[in-house]
Image 1 (cartoon, rainbow, N blue to C red):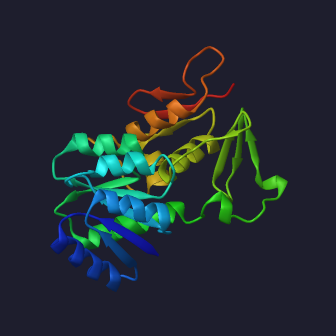
Image 2 (cartoon, rainbow, N blue to C red):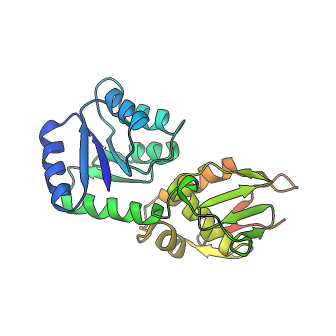
Length: 232
């Protein structure tokens, strides 16, 4: 697996590169946001780890521009305690975040978790699907093998985490999915009492879905319980 680590802390990136190399990853580094973005435009990576605080083009700028042309899985490195950085990163399409200074083993575990969620690959690399594998649910057409979801005939542009969340909601359409279950099934981790990751991801998904005929959002919040994907 090819990982791109974008961080201006040369000492840290060298440490992470060597550790992740021993864990079986192929790691390239970029010390600036602009150069990292150019590499993601021209080269093929399986995941990027991007530091938020960099001079010039910072991590948020890089993520914002990246999401205009790529669904590459991204883990953001944020300053410890900077909740707003984490929320903004998720709103821009990050798949996960980890606070600095971080334990290299934890970073490796997060990378593996995100890659597992996206390992089915992109539509371009998927094999042709038989018609019985495509599921039609309300206005959605769900292609699990190629990880595509269509709504009203148009493909939704989703990050890996957004796809996982929506696919779980689709598999339980019309039913309430509890927060803990959705976090574990879609994101591969436990839901913490102050964790807003799901809320941010679902807010992004809502903006990408057409409303119901009555104008209400298709994904409904069931307070203190979880979320429900409403049928037509």
